[in-house]
Image (cartoon, rainbow, N blue to C red; front, side, top):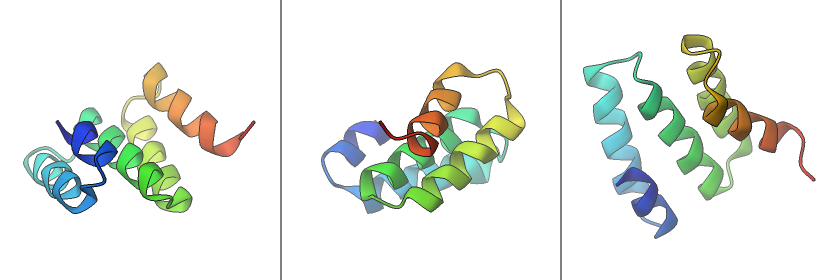
Length: 76
């Protein structure tokens, strides 16, 4: 749902849901990944990289998050 809201340009709604999930569980991989995607959709590369790195710190082998970070750090 968060990603759909973000893709619709409803960034504030998407961020609110992501923040609520992280308040309940600060180690929530999906929450950090979603925040990264939302920030990326908004065009805030630095914030997206921060969120992806937070997720990777918690779950270093998650390929979805690694791909998101790689995409931002190595634009084609």
